[in-house]
Length: 87
Image 1 (cartoon, rainbow, N blue to C red):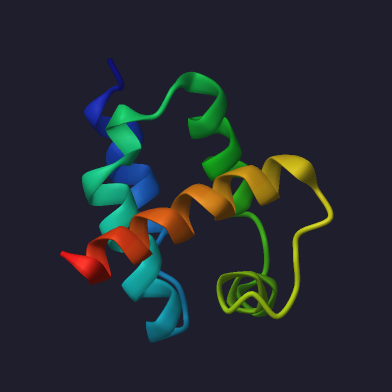
Image 2: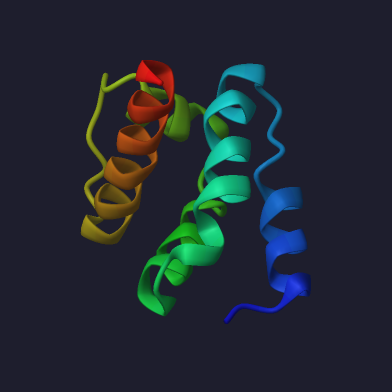
């Protein structure tokens, strides 16, 4: 079980300078982060250290992250966003 403090930190970190990123990241954190395993939570935390422009390119699938950990969590975030859009 994750600590409330960790979830609060990730919610804050997910608030980016671009609305487009907020619309993808904030729902993922709110709905999925607490269900992730420790490794995926670490991946997400590392992802939050990336620049907004990188994240934007990855989420639009213009580029693929070279770092496999980033690629793995980006894929989960995109899957969540697409599933949410279909519901």
